[in-house]
Image 1 (cartoon, rainbow, N blue to C red):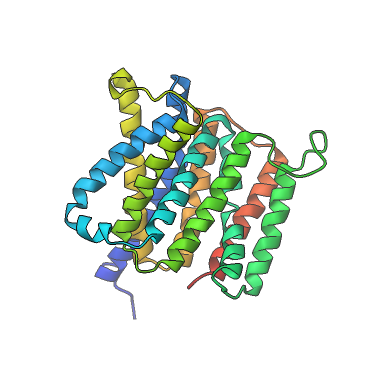
Image 2: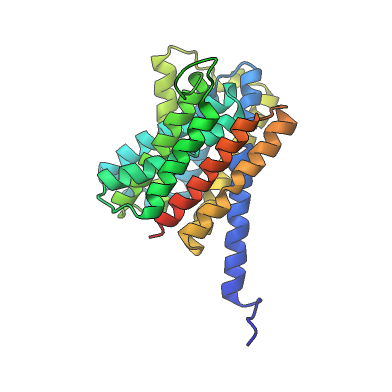
Length: 299
């Protein structure tokens, strides 16, 4: 018996795959507009503040009919917003000054932290593949980060890489919080993330006593770049949400690793960055660990 490739189920599957691939492309190149803004003199925190202002404004209009329910949500949404806010801001700050692929790979250690947090916080039983993933990820990180001439310990070598590491931990914490607060709707979670980045960016600007330029101080070109970044992040959020709701989580996560391929190509052609052999080997092990960890948490 032949399968009907034109069936509605098949069409939804292909659309989900395309959605995830499109989302991966967006996240793989979203660093570039922020780096262009930094080169024009606008910090990552300020760029994040304005791009997420736009995203929050657009989502506020879309969520008008949900405002009553949003106001009645539990305090858990505040925790989610704060953690997700730092995750996104730290990632932007990291890719502006750091090497894109090293930042990406340090961020992709997040499945390791998710396993640890889920084990100790949510009391989820870690399977054998989980322990294998932890070992592979740690080995990959060691190979990528170890530089005998710089330090005897395999640690991030600059502020950007520490930010990338903290962003990955924040992403894992966001996943665990999302698992715990299952009553939150997709609409509420998306709005919380965007609003969280806006508020955390503003807090960062105030704490560091950085200037916050008025909207009219930006050139047409700068507004164009920030609108481009906003378009990418909104599009990525929407298509990824569609993809993960129509596809098994394990398959979705593996497809999303395509983001690293996009980032590698984009960083080579747009930023003229290349990776050393130890970074390729370590990065490959981290990707393998991500896949192992994904299959460990298939529920």
